[in-house]
Length: 211
Image (cartoon, rainbow, N blue to C red; front, side, top):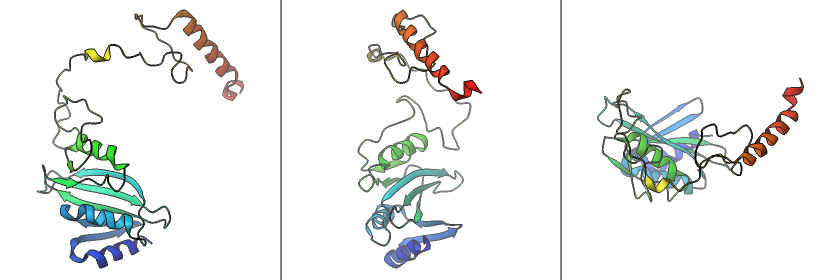
């Protein structure tokens, strides 16, 4: 089924489809960065393709190449049941257009690619780090990032002082959670008693405990 997608792309874009491959159900089309968004939009909008579901976008780093990054977009059709991977190759510092206008779910995934590899997406609505803190230097999944690199210490942010401590008795699941460290905002005695009551009930009702 997915081979039909490659045939459709070749018929529509001709030599703008630089490479294709098919191996055990994994169909791949490679395009230039300038054709990235056009081909992605065709895959979504063409009725025969109907790639309505965004699955993932990631990067593979080949530091020995001039165009060192393979940017990989993975798509799936909910109605047709086929899938495809769209790739483009980027030099360090090159940019590519965002696909967030096509699939809103790509927003955080593109931010992760930027955070981990430094690839920038033109037109992204909020391109900033998502896993690392703002002062983090470099991009930790690049193969030239030293494994023993030490990052700068970050001072405590005063604006965080009024935030509630996590895992209080009234937050989330109380099962097995306790505050073992003495703090000004530690749980009250009645909070701990309430939590331990839930813990006892969970153990009593756990089928594994009766085996």
